Length: 278
Ligand SMILES: CC(C)(COP(=O)(O)OP(=O)(O)OC[C@H]1O[C@@H](n2cnc3c(N)ncnc32)[C@H](O)[C@@H]1OP(=O)(O)O)[C@@H](O)C(=O)NCCC(=O)NCCS
Image 1 (cartoon, rainbow, N blue to C red):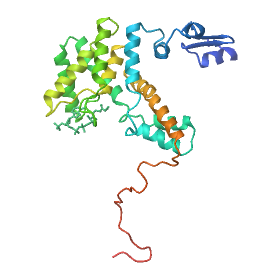
Image 2 (image 1 turned 135 degrees about the vertical axis):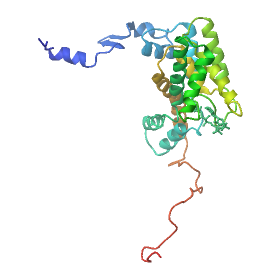
Image 3 (image 1 turned 30 degrees about the horizontal axis):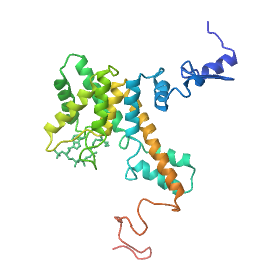
Image 4 (image 1 turned 90 degrees about the horizontal axis):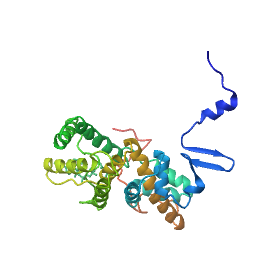
């Protein structure tokens, strides 16, 4: 027999959620009243509570905070930042500028962390099935290159021969590991992959921020798909700041290149509508 819910109960179940309880005078996140959280929980710890349903321990919070902090900005060379600034110069609201920027954080720009953690997780699974670290890494690298892919996500950088963000993040990951605040073998996997790529290539291909944050988010137990969301959250700080700076500037309708610089035209040479072509 099918039970028929009354309309109010149907409405209550429509948006049923584990995240927030709210009624007049009551706001609770995963059971914690907001008035207790205010002043006690940092913004970083709040993100953790929202996503994981409980508060981080101090070592987890320090590590999570560092990963979120390290990726806030990479300057207007990054398409998302340039887009935020161009959008702002068109006279849109700051939310439109931020949304335009966040919308281009896709598989190629901003997605490397998610892809890298998926890669690390396959190696972690190999270890859990009994492989030693080197064999688990070699298997995955072999499968990766054999599939025709050339660039392992999370390694190499267009601008930085050594990404200055990676080593301090990995050191913090090591500290958290020693405090038993992490899970898995993500630090040694990340360092091992870096070592194995270097042995296959003509020059080293050091770990970049996406590789380091992927190792951290994996070690903190976040699923790979959340890596991208966390990167968007982090980069939103830079997006907001650049949009705001642009808002204070007098430039209007700012294009991707300075005035007077033009693109190459690669189409049909000039022709005439009334002259038949030979
Ligand atoms: C960012 C990136 C495009 C920079 O590439 P680049 O420094 O211009 O590298 P090049 O294309 O000149 O390649 C130089 C050599 O390094 C190798 N290499 C560079 N990045 C590599 C990577 N991630 N994995 C494996 N090999 C890599 C190339 O295969 C090439 O080797 P070869 O000389 O034997 O052919 C590239 O490293 C990459 O796509 N990385 C993965 C994506 C990523 O993590 N993006 C986030 C960046 S913060």
